[in-house]
Length: 96
Image 1: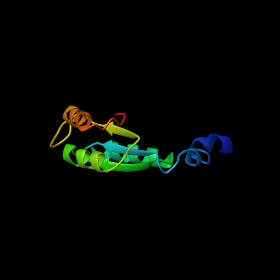
Image 2 (image 1 turned 45 degrees about the vertical axis):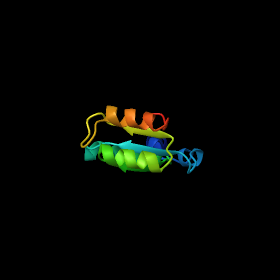
Image 3 (image 1 turned 120 degrees about the vertical axis):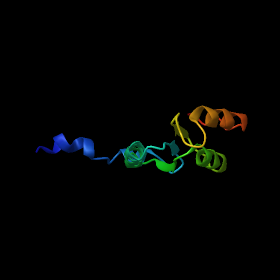
């Protein structure tokens, strides 16, 4: 196989462009989706935190700073719409 055919698997510049301050919270209860997002974004150099339900998502989003929150709608213990409403009411304006 030619080297250029494998270039999509080489990430030399991607990890250099992202700083440690670029953090993403992924809120997803389906393990395969969560794992895929976490793996892909980590390979791009982002610092990833995860939550599998609404209560854990609120706890993390309130306790830590994130540049982005990827939020599922249907979650155990609290749905995504309720989480977003609570985050905004608490003054957390992180893009979702």
